[in-house]
Image (tube, rainbow, N blue to C red; front, side):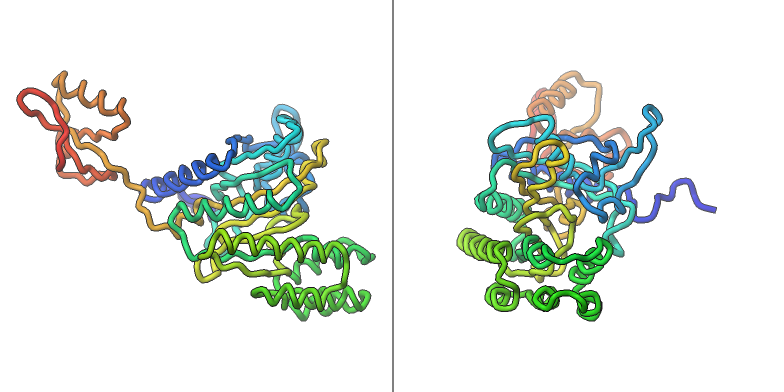
Length: 387
């Protein structure tokens, strides 16, 4: 018999020690986004299902919780990713002509965890840039993602670059059913060479060899040279490789401590990417911290297809890699009915100070705040002094 206080699997409370670190990280990220000109938006947690899943592919559908709206009878979804919502806001509500930079931070819900110890309720932070088709927008979003993590104290980051147009260029002339193409993409994402060989056996030689080469095209600059030799000379593929070369050069110039590589078979994340894409990893290249890229088609279903590029990350995952404690300095004050004391406490709080009043009988307890000062009476006046 289950206990009433037990939570569902991969759902957890965030307790004070962790919550203050996550909140500190959230403020760092939002301040970084604002410094790039991003405006904050807050999409709803629930939407009509067709709006949430428009143009996002099968993977997001499987990760989305569905329920019936008691008011309309329509099927609603609990968002599993905020990017389609932000695209809807840009296309349908803001409807601006020029460049729009938006950021967001809020929970998303997944039907299954992303890994053995993953949460089904990530706290997703992200930023999106709409309205500019040039690589300048891709670079800005990539640098914002790097800057967000750097401001949180993370260095030695690893970035892998890829491009959705490489696979699209290989498959554009292939006549295969959708389930088979889905299996090919899954085999590429898993770098499952035997399954990929089996699935591509009946494809045209140039396409077959190109698809089989992708899992090996992972590493440094030599990857792009090998790709030009092993992949078909197709305009979309050539343009993708040229763009990746430019982006890598710019990133290395601006961020000498960043290790930039390439993974042309990286298909992780959602299916809406349409151009250059990237993943940022913690030092050592194991844990994924952020993902992003270009997704020009997401707003089309909302009546306005225009250039878009963005990234997102899970604050709950990233906070595991940061070193700060999140504690803030505070002032300890005694509790009494003394009017002067109570006025002094109110005045300090209005000034932005944290004042922790020690309630009667709890003088020896350790609190969550770093009380480096105390409020004491000196010659009839309440003053702050160092502990």
